[in-house]
Length: 134
Length: 134
DNA sequence: GCGAACTTAAACACTTTTCGTTAACTTTCC
DNA sequence: GGAAAGTTAACGAAAAGTGTTTAAGTTCGC
Image (cartoon, rainbow over all chains, first blue to last red):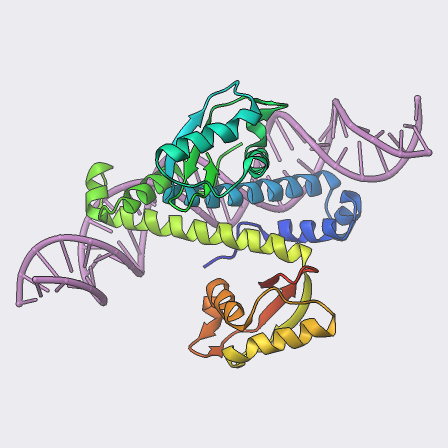
């Protein structure tokens, strides 16, 4: 039974980074090149991203598909689309307009450019009105 | 840039399981043995566990070490230890006694046997009174 | 422009994970 | 007891991930 996703090396680098050390300083401490510290840090961040995405998937397992927001939609129209669709199936959304936009931008920043949705976004909802973007 | 931790196969099995299918039924659908479905499901759960642990580690990066609960401590004494230590450094813990015990059991079940702590548990705390076990 | 910090790409050896098989085992429910 | 559901162990081949190096590329403050 192994631990988390991160290797000892990756956690080591992240801890030193948290302390404010530069990649070169860390490279000296752990006796390797700064390029290597960079790749280790990068793969650590990648692993963290994957961990988050994995749990997001778990949530969508409990949720049902609410609607799909098409590419090109104005970001500020997304909440009203969600409210309308949720009302159709008689579920009250847990979030207000602002929170929805924030949640969307946080979890799907790569699907938003400025004020536009630049990639179809699948919206999931649970019976409790929790919203997830997939 | 890959997706989450789970493979397509693993997500497929989890979805079918969520629908209530048995391992045998899934095995028939995806054309393999039920033993294989079992191992795929098991490794999916293991990956989910690792994803959670990875994010837990992230939180401990933001947190400072509060105290270490030694092996053999009674489980129901843990909260008062935490409250006392947090008070020393003037941080109000976000949780009550019951929630703390629940959180502990959920995140570190392998460190608890019945009413006893069976492995040293490191306790972390953030400035906001958030508690993590490491 | 200079230097320090950081990023990237290609290649390599190495380890771990994954999916699959077969066969035996435990659990659960009637 | 018996059937269905689930688990486990041992093994193999293919795929994916890790830590390194070297060398060339940013980016940013001064």
